[in-house]
Image 1 (tube, chains in turn red, cyan):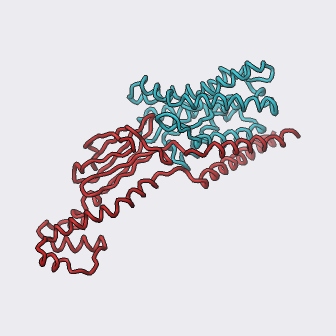
Image 2 (cartoon, chains in turn green, cyan; image 1 turned 90 degrees about the horizontal axis):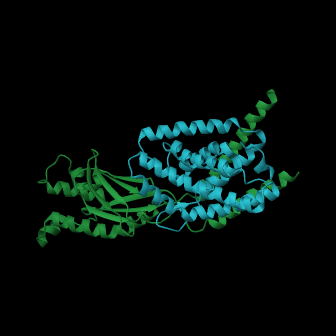
Length: 215
Length: 203
C-alpha cells in the first residue's frame, strides 16, 4: 500500500518545514498595553511576538464612548498622552489591514485618590493619606506626620514625592509587563490545535462511515 | 489577513457569514470518505501556516497556504479553512469569532477561484512547464485575491478601497512569491507520489 507509507512522509515533511521556518517570530495579532504614571498614560502596541506597531493611529475614548484625543504610535510602537479627563479611559489601536486592539484603564488607575477618598473632600488630608498609604502598603512604620511637622513639609508634598519615586521604581516593571503582554501562541496551543484537527478527522470519518454502512 | 473583531459593521459580518455558510455547504456535500484525511492534514497545514511570519515589509504578514488548499480540495477548502480559522481564533486570538464568516470567505473564495482558474494545468497529464507555472500562479493568485477581498471588505466598511488594497497587496508580495514556490513544490511532490490527489475531482 503506497498510500499508507507516503501519507506520514508528507505530514512529517510539512511539520519539519514549519518548525524550521518558524524561527523568526509569530505574527498576526495586535495588542495594546496601557499604563498610568503620574498624570501621563503610556501605551505600547505590538504585533504578537514583539514586532512593534509603527505609525498607527491610537484613539482614546472616555467611559461614555466620547472620543477624547487621537495620536500615532512612534517607531517603538509607543504613544503617551496626559490624562485628558478624570474618567475611565479606553485606548483603541487601529493597525493597518483590519487589525484592531483595545485596552481599558479603570478609573482607580487614573485617579487613585479620588477612589480611596470617595465622598470625603480634600480637606481631610490626614484621613486620605492614611487610607492611600495603607492601600499601597508602603507604611514602613515611620511616623510621617511627625516627620513632616519637624521638617516643615506638608503631608501632601511627601505623598507626591513618594508617588513619584514609586512610579520611577515601578517603571521597569511596567515595561516588563508591557513587553510580556500579548505574546505569541505557545507550543501547547499549537500542538493542541493540531490535536483538535485530528480529532475532527476522526469524528468526520465516523459519521461518513456510518452513512456508508446504511447503504 | 485576519480582520480583527470590532472593525467591520454587523451587516458585512452577517453577509460574509451567509456566503461562507453556502460555501461550506457545497464543500461538505462533496466530501468523500477517502478524502477526509487529506482535508485534515491540509487543515493542519493551514492552521500552522499563519504562525510562519515573514519579517519583510512594514506590516506583519504570514503564510496563508490557501492556494494549495484550493488546488487539492476545491470547494472543500471552505470547511477546511473555516475549521483552521476557528482554531486560530480560539487558541491564538487571531481574528475573532464574529469575523470568522468574513475571514473564511476572504481566504476560501480565492482558493476556489484558483482551483477553477488553474486547476486544469495542475494535472499529471499536463507538461512539466505548464504544471509548474499553473501551480505557481495558483499559490500566488490565491494570496493576491485574498488581499483584494480583504481590501474590499474594508472598503465596504467605509475605508478607501485603493489605498487599503494597495497596502495589503504590497505587504503580501513576499508572501505571494513564497506561496507560489511552495505550492509549485508541493504540487510537484504530489504529482510524483500521489497524482490521483490532483486528478480526482475537477469541475
